Image (cartoon, rainbow, N blue to C red):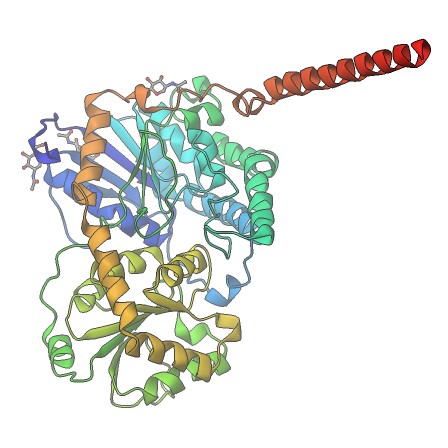
Length: 499
Ligand SMILES: *[C@@H]1O[C@H](CO)[C@@H](O)[C@H](O)[C@H]1NC(C)=O
Ligand SMILES: *[C@@H]1O[C@H](CO)[C@@H](O)[C@H](O)[C@H]1NC(C)=O
Ligand SMILES: *[C@@H]1O[C@H](CO)[C@@H](O)[C@H](O)[C@H]1NC(C)=O
């Protein structure tokens, strides 16, 4: 049975993702549109209103007056410890900015709306879960990447440190001793330090900004987070990490990939006439090449200009930069449609999740220069699987960058593996978007679907990890050893006496 044949009454759905994190929002936005198409009345509180009207889709926001562009060089030094602090920092700062905005105050305090379902993102904004309390509605959490420890703990899904790498760890699943140690440290920080240094700030934000009618009866933040009905995760085991999930945690990575549409005429011609093939270069929405140190930018450009392929770069160069004729630049390109063109031979990327999903979908091999967050892990996995090469930004030279490009272009293995990856990624019982719709409507039909929650949700760590039982077993073993020792001692002393 597909999602489309199950009848669900049209529901009033609130999407509450106010923080201005573009890639997180755009990974899930196709789902909101699809729900509106299916007749649900979708209200989206975000920093990214649609640029066109859509029936059954109402935007609320934005909640910031203008987006501050982050300089990527502030983010590249993130490691397995500072990434945790950075997440805390971003969450606390951005929350104040967004929640104190006039539009937001009006929306939170208004009591005219009612909703049957609330969809939130908890990354850096755990307090959003209180919208479920305000509207007395079940909550769905939208996870922008594979769950990390600090949100796995609310769902009680195992985030075993020995083989599930933290998304910000510069490692992969087959970790050596040092990597496992780092993974454990970042995991423990997220499970325990979070509660003392970060969650209190989130509660403070919640109690400051979410004073709607009836807020006094609100359960503690931890209880509401544990009571989230369903978590939709933007990842896919075939191109990421294979790990155990619960019935209420559903992977929907790739929802944003649409069948390719026609390219603008100039792009179509540029791609069509490229006899040597085309290389597409994009470092995503946060990385602006103009922010790179000059020597790094020169490395990129010197290598790219020497290539015999045509090159499309998502970038607006400064006026004094002269580029050779094989290069086309622009502020934005229809990446999905470009990657679908048969002349594209290589994608040079930052390793962002959406880019990885698109490149795998169209079987295009990659050279990746990761900058921050999960990009390193994504690229490491691509390299391990064999459809890409990782170039370290700090160690990059013209030679290493050029060699990586030549290697991926000339060795047919990369393309072959990319094709296999593409096949397993696409071989799914239903499209990721349909799967997401199915589960959203499932929660609506089943009034919150509490049976999806883990049966372990009420256990504390001592009970969950059987620490109390282990203690008893250890004591018993100790007692038995003592007893044996005493008996042996007794017997040998008897023997001595009788001798
Ligand atoms: C909007 O929702 C109504 C039902 O609530 C539905 O009949 C209609 O088809 C939807 N419109 C579009 C364009 O999807
Ligand atoms: C749909 O949502 C909008 C915005 O929240 C609301 O104003 C409108 O009354 C809703 N329509 C229906 C039919 O519930
Ligand atoms: C948990 O969520 C359900 C709806 O999914 C709701 O009925 C219930 O009151 C919630 N419980 C708590 C403690 O928040």
